[in-house]
Image (tube, rainbow, N blue to C red; front, top):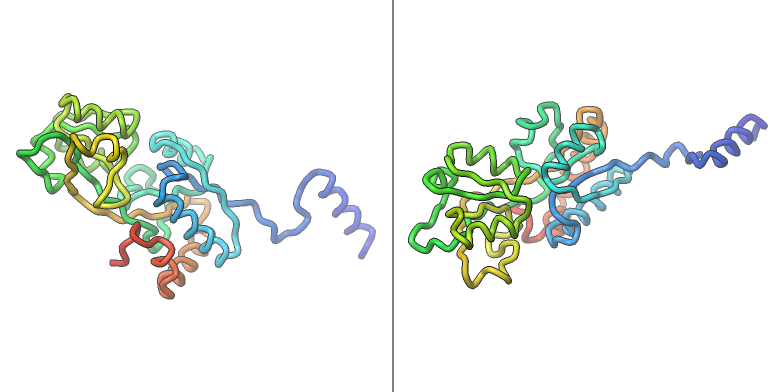
Length: 237
């Protein structure tokens, strides 16, 4: 080894810079739901496998929806791992990673037992609450005259429970369960109104990551590994 290479290696070590060129900077991803949620735990396992297949590293952080969007736009995150196909309406140059990583079910939850909304269109004749920053809900309820944005899922449910609105509209990882059901399930009913695919999205400067991750996830889908990891949180259709 030449004296020059030895000198460069020692300098990098002193500065705390990885001397190994293969030791790339981790890709920074954000999700909208807390990391302890069962579906997000499954997403993390799927990402662990996909990034390993792609020969990359990543970090995963939870931010509330609105904060996550602002941070993504500002470049604080390379990608967002929990957005619907309407995400380009918010970030036109975002790059979608294929295939979808999970599904989410949208529920109308309330105390009204006489009416059962079954679609976004049905909701237009009611008043609703939703969690601030969930743009997928906001976009799809544009025809609802009375909408209230809340700061949390529980605040949304409490508005419907107190009949300040007719329905609280939430995203849930399963059709058979919803956030805080253990606390409010004896007083409120949930009605599925839609089920949509959730994708990983990368910023426009990370097309290389998007391409490599798409290749890895498609291979995992082909072998059945992706579906096995995600289980009930993903439908293969």
